[in-house]
Length: 362
Image (cartoon, rainbow, N blue to C red; front, side, top):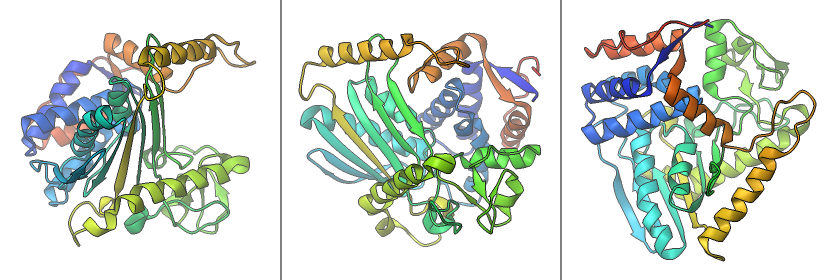
């Protein structure tokens, strides 16, 4: 697939200028740009600039309010509830994370809840913020199935749940932090949409057709099929169990349904509830002891012998950290079709981004 290469700094500036032209304040535009470019740097293109054209359409329809400020609805010892007020979800979720960090430092444990928020992007971003402060985190988001169910439960064919992302983060010392971040479906929705647009097949175990039969044709999903929980033929029950837990802990635990205003916000996100659980890593022993122990375990994993057919053993978060380091030095490769849509969307607001991309790669 043809790709272009863009420097991280230039891309950040282009995203920020586009968001500002769409009505975001300087701080919100910068936060959004940092998040989207951070996803690209980490190699998680499904949560990067791909979404900008859609965000601009949502702003035009009045579903996303770029100038809105997140609002604290409730605050007490060790907990807070935040309304995103329909601004960029990344801005709202980062607000919850940064507000919960001092609560966790004081109480040892803090729980943040987010409602009335749009797409909050890569959950690993918030886990990385927490890990940098010596905090363990558990973050999840549910509620999308209320208005846009796309995933079938294990053994079923009906669209009942959704991608329901789940994340955990653990701080380390010299090693990169552990960041466990994934959708509870076999694939993210973006990968299914991209496969359809590009005429590609999906990996087995990703979707079923309208009759509940396994298929690798992405068109079958859009003809009434459904995403499958992760785990494939032998482990899909595990993905389904976690998917259900995220719905319980995301939408229902936060009480997101009670904060819905009819016909406001992006339909898929109206009932979204996100939970941010932060734990001080030094609750039971000095922080340095925790970091040293984590480093020792992670180094042992990293230095263990690879199985046949594998070059090396990684732990969750290490590949992203290495990809980030490489792309900061050499630029970010972006699929040509994604880049062209993004540049066209920015251009619709008078922002010219066509000159910052490097030579195309095969």
